[in-house]
Image (tube, rainbow, N blue to C red; front, side):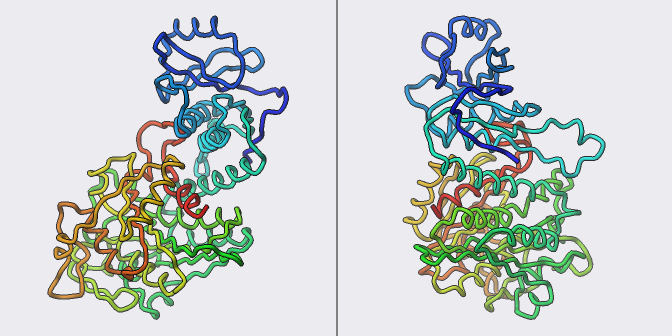
Length: 476
């Protein structure tokens, strides 16, 4: 288990982490500790160090085995929290195989602790013979900065639940089907004070009219589930609903996806993993915010019982949908859960989280997520939060002129419309299931939930845990 502590006295550690920046006159060491800079800078220059972001240079240490120089980019009088967070994160990732490290980059205790803790992650649950060869992440992190014990405890909680999200997303779909997801979350929820859980199985979903979950899940041997977690402190200042898309594997159904990169579709349940993790972190932090988290879980498979293109399903609450494309399934399970969530008449806002559209990836790439809304004030509040957490979101519009493309002569609405602006059309579809007076955010995290390239900053290869920290910070 990871331990976060302040550096209060001399300790024996494997590594010391400091910053390195590119100044006008050459390299600059950035650290809260005094170092013999002249000789070190000459060595760094000789080996070609640049100080660029994500660069890590290791030299033999004196009081520690290693001194690790983590790139900060261009030298500045003051560095942003995200710059420090990323520098600490990539340093921690490069220190796998070491037990302990001192982080002395900057006097921003939270940023260093978050980056170091988020970077100290590995997933080895499904390794066999090679498990023993995997280098374990840091288990002891010492922060040389001003701060209190409450801050580090908070970082530990937030990091642990972000890691839980990553674990769920990294699990193979042969293991993590809807039922298993519900069981794992139930095990965790029982250990968090103040959290209640309810799970709907396929029989209950069908009898109560959850047509989206049943329609998407009916082609699979693994039936759907709806998981509801609730946390209601005595004096809640606000009440939020967090709703997550939980497609534990997405073949596309009878709109079968190409084989290339289909393995990444195990991450199509990231939204569900994010909202349940955020709720349990909020409960552990004892924040005065009431939260309902809804995980809409199904597996979208190909079979003789799968939903056909042109089938009509009835979403919970009665609205009918013509399923023109069975691969636009996430919005169907979300619609069920969003309508159900609004039975809580005390809601101040709703936020849904989903790996919803490939169109979002085309628009914003794999580092930025999208946010769409019916309430600009709520969106501005959320974007202020993401400035703090360092999670990158960009607001996209919901153009009314695209709404007519969802019209169909057969049902109340179709599940796909205009191809151009597909992410916006998906947002407009979800908006149809939101009461006009309820402030709502739609977070499309497609492409950001899974890092298929190189590790960077505090982001490992594989599941990223995107949106968890921002959902927690929103409640704070």
